[in-house]
Length: 99
Image (tube, rainbow, N blue to C red):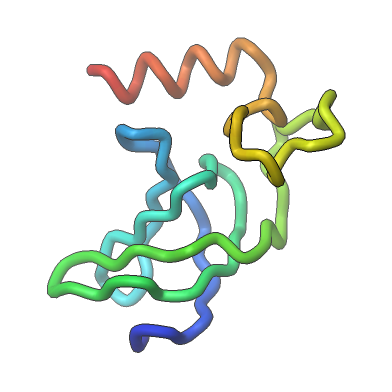
């Protein structure tokens, strides 16, 4: 994995502030805007000893709990980051982040 390369990672959990976390090549991978259960592709923005940060490029596999987005501007304006999740899942993820 090199800075600027494109990689694919399965998201396992979320961490504050609303970022998905997966593991690849023994490193924690942080992806803003990703949620557990998704398989995402992203470009490596930052690479350090134990972790890397990706810029989300695409969601290759959706999670089981994702729903259709009610707003046509979702993903473009940046106002709502979890509109494609059920309300119960949004609460679950937020409560996990603040523990």
